[in-house]
Image (cartoon, rainbow, N blue to C red; front, side, top):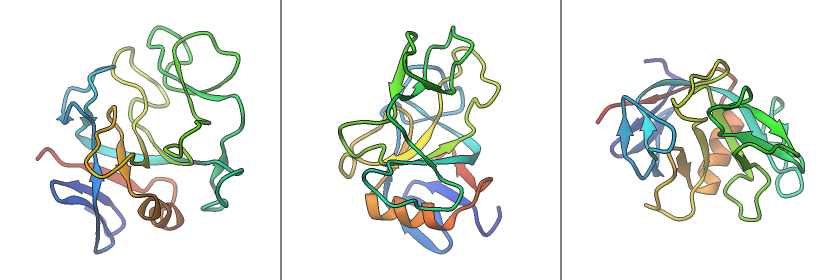
Length: 166
């Protein structure tokens, strides 16, 4: 492991000597992630993109990309744009990135099943704001808003998120 790795452990996310409480998917951890299982995949994932809501927060890093009206993420495993950032109008199954709630005001995008996605292997694993402590995600890693902002201001593209099989 490297000094700048984020390590997901049973006691939280470790990064640069700090521990951040976090939540994971309702399906727990999985070494065999599948679309819709609600699990957080075990393994080494890289941060490939930071997305943020410019109407709600300041740009967290020079390489961050604003979430614009109409930005979506495809979770249609039978579509060529599966597990990709897409734009409305987009008829296949998708997730809106510009949400009414604050969960996606800041999103760290991992390379899980990206950019060359495998059908059914699960759409992207994000790091995003939690609803509340202990409330599970659909497979993503969720943190307290201030902790997510701290991480986003320090990490770089390629920073590794290592999810250990507890």
